[in-house]
Image (cartoon, rainbow, N blue to C red; front, top):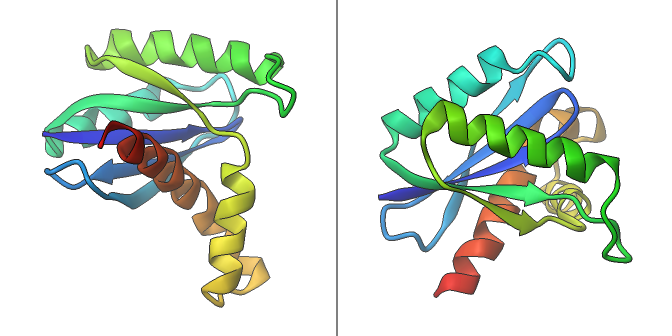
Length: 139
């Protein structure tokens, strides 16, 4: 069984999936939507990926503020979590995602990815960092 990691953003969702031993996270794709409230196709794609990859449960990035308070994005993430549970029937674990996007950009810079191309990868790299952090915590 595998674990899926998600980086939920206002118009994109980065997706990563663990290996079957749940040791490493691999970036999979970025799901894009036309507006923040258009989630039907996004949820359908996540369910499809979960089914195809024999996903046991989902780890969803939880965007707390740096001072550990909860802002507007936290409420939207909680609402998205409820929709994920209803659509997939899977458990959805919230995982602190502070600084993952910054770390993802650093990984892309170090990897020599040109600035104009980084946006295409940053969300799925962030998802893999969220998932890897979680995987490291359970082993």
